[in-house]
Image (tube, rainbow, N blue to C red; front, side, top):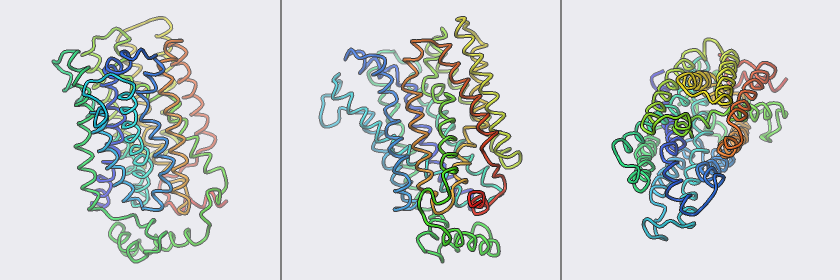
Length: 454
């Protein structure tokens, strides 16, 4: 158990970088607007597209993750993601590199910034698919939910860390300095965890299920034995060999239902609006009349709540099961979003709004946040796991981009409508789980595969 936990912790650094990279923009987005958008006379749609540009890379990274993880393996795919994170951090911090003068406000610098953010997004998309895949393929069935949920904890912890980093960089500094220099330090800070992740990956093995797929049976059995003990390892290895030999690797070899299920899990996880709360948190609080420093502090408080409720999921997912947590989470998210919509309609600003934002995000973090990744890592059969996860993750990032990039425009139209829409999606997510999602608690990956054989 100690060995597999150590492997999981290394893999979850990819999740930490995922969270760090996606949330670093929350502290820098107003500075980017002042530094690049306003001087060029661009609209709120251009602002939303720039803030969400990394998501284009996430879609690309998610889409190619199946091909890369199948060709390079899970371990080398994560190494590639670490390299992309590092390059993106340097480029986003200094987009003028090579081609432009320092401090230049031009369309070229804006495009360069977007390019480097897209590179980082590819790393995020790759890590978001391969990290839970790696953990799911090495973890014993009885603790798989808990260990894969650690990846979500790492994502949220990465977001919390960057909230503190952004706050520390901005604390006590003038707005002019933050808009000119401070935002660069925010992006540059990403290089530290990226280097740590890349170095530690040299010390972890490839997953036994991937090794079996490429016919390195001795190495696969060796790793299974180290994780599960000799007797259990032989049983698991026999089951893996059976699933690898029985079916072709075409994406619809097990029917369309499992693929559609993975896509809908991913789409609902984004359509409930969680990343709006994460990306635009400081601005949401400021729009409620809160001072800049206080809004950053409240964002940190919300981040702490997110960590606490992700821990709740970690300790309950293998006891209560996946479906009960998802249903409870959907109910909480619907209550939170409908309340915020009502407050927005009546222009009510105060502590009640913050309370319901926390109710909403806490409900997500103890359910759809980690459990979606757990299910995506375990519902797909061995032969198609890489390709199927790639489709699900690409759909997730496409939905993420659509929701995040349209948020500023939707808010200009109506705040009540915007939050009401996310509330409706929360209700639909509940119906989807109730009707379609199977319970996978305590079942081996090979046992889950039998659901789709039927």
